[in-house]
Image (cartoon, rainbow, N blue to C red; front, top):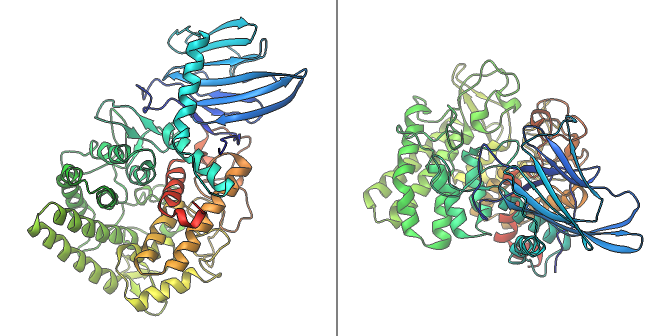
Length: 554
């Protein structure tokens, strides 16, 4: 039995929509503390609930998950339980040694909306903390809740797997569980968020990456992750980059939805799911063609001209120096995503017996391939670049996006070999932790978000492209390196991070995030702190292990 026993400051603690009703505007969400055995709850008036460990000689964790903590403490040679679990969206219950439970508000003033009811017994103090006035803390009820929350994770016990990889895999399941909201507002089914705090909302390409990991929990959750994204579609076909039950943003994000749908259909054979998504996908891709396509036929991202550190959040690569001092460009990533979406739509149309539409998507995919190779390939440098519309010149900046033609199936054999050579070149993209977000040769390379660190979503896409081109040895090495690198960080820190240092020289808490990091960790300060227990790091870690078990001894 693999234990979930790695404590991590900043690890998320939240009630899951898999267990019952959640509320976007009213929820009890917390993160594990670093200086106490307890939780920092992020309400309107934040507070800490923790165990006073004065005089404690030992503390052992049995289960540390996103909605249950099970442990025991040794006080004067006697072991006592310390357990906390979510009963509902706004209530936690638990057991603590008598006289050891502490409730401390950050402001020093008690929030009248927070109630704490305790009952002392010979076995310890039973407690119920609630935002809804719930006071129930009977021994049998608490034990039943604790056991139910713990038992959920027994279903995902890995076998014959390296211990660090296995423990990290279980934590990935835990994080995925915490990401799930119940139906609310515009969402007609379960929906997911990168993390319940601070992002909170649904995000476009995040949801697609979530679906890949959510298949570990259930294929229905994987499907709901995408169907809930389609719930956000506007009448004109646009799918916004972020949405909550009541509203949405004004820009979009990388189109990888049809690709994610196709992956589920290929795995499950569920043609009804394909039919459920097809028309909405067609409408969305048409919106991209109508609003983000250049006269030449390739695709551009909206540029935030008035922002220095968030020049292109529509691309998902907010602060990448790729966008410094430029305006709109024909972008290699956007154009490749659209080509891969056309491939996926061809596949879905074929499954649904839509022969005419399948032919149209196939033809469009060929057109995009030709345009990408004609306009974005640089023969001299043997790589792909963006094309600046204002100057009518290639923007010679090499980032992970230069490898998206592998993912999209655009490369010739000769072009593939050139890209593989760059991936294997220590001066550009070969690093101790695969794969840096920009070339190490670029003068802006560093540790700030999209200016050097490793992001697992692009690693996943590049690996898929390498498998597509028969580069199995390199793809396997990249997948193994990524999984083991994330597992090593998890065993040290007990959390997943947004991104990692490709050179393994700077710990993730000290990486820049649009500015210098602050310490200690305060998750509400997400602008300048690497977010912990980040959504797609967890889901794609799980997807890598689930899809390539042979690489990890399973």
